Image (cartoon, rainbow, N blue to C red; front, side):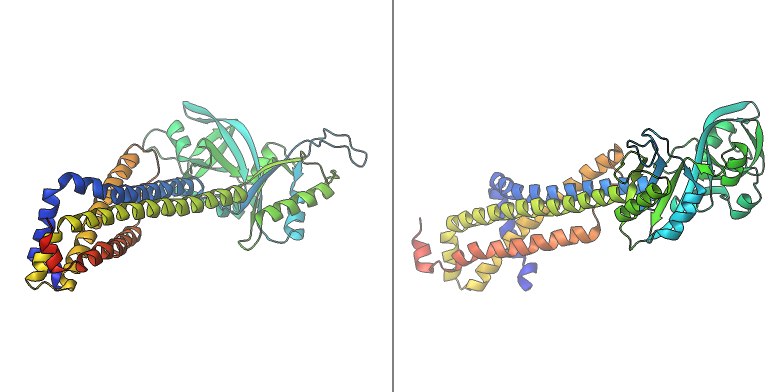
Length: 405
């Protein structure tokens, strides 16, 4: 390892680069471009993943949403076009009959005029159970979310989003513990939360039981959220739920219009697969380009060895061993490869910083272990490709080299 700290070795590399600046730049461009692609694409993939996580991070990803639709087929005496309305009895049967279910939460929704003093806004009013917080985690900044006592006692309380607070309250005005008027009924504010990107911002949440009484909903509700266990297949759970509801509501088994919804788990699986494929493609393209660039370095070093034939012959005649010659050529190969890689990593980092500053992606970064792996690959490739010109240099006979013009 002493040759790594040999001043003469590094001086020789410096002189070689100084005398052939243009050729050196052209030589290292391929490796530079390969590592730049690798860093840039991996950072972009990470930015997409971070954006996706920010969008759905507070939500149970193994979930689907369902609401009643209109039938498209006549069945058992019922005409097509019948409106299907979900009930709390359906929820109880789903919980009992469907394996793989973790949580089922019915929800109601309406629009309402909300007033605080002289300020007012038309907002989205939800009727919710405490279980919603387990599916869609509320990032509370003040107070609490709805609890079971609120449900059991039909309390007139509400939880508002931070955006609703901004619309209805002055800065630093106390809200929790005070009252809002929603459709001419007073509700005590018990909590404020910061909404996620997945949900709307103008939301007010009431206890499900209170909403049911105030808006005369009976046992009916608008839609529900179903979360499956981690070991369950979310698509199969959705199919089982729809099959059960078709039986309960006497719907044709092949009627696909009776229920509307969105399978979040299914869509997340697609995105996860896309991100995995993108990362694999990124590594493949980056490494392939990097290998091509390193081969270019090897080819240039072969030319360099040919040009320095006489010099190598003189060094051999003066006592330089084949090992010493090989070490010098390999060191130059590794140095050029690492130089190209370092410049590529720096350029890729700068590009990712610009993308982040422009808010085009969410925190597009490359983890330090990935950078270290890239450097390790560079060293291995640089060493391997350096062996070829190094071998060619050592088979040069001193006498033949001295005759070289």
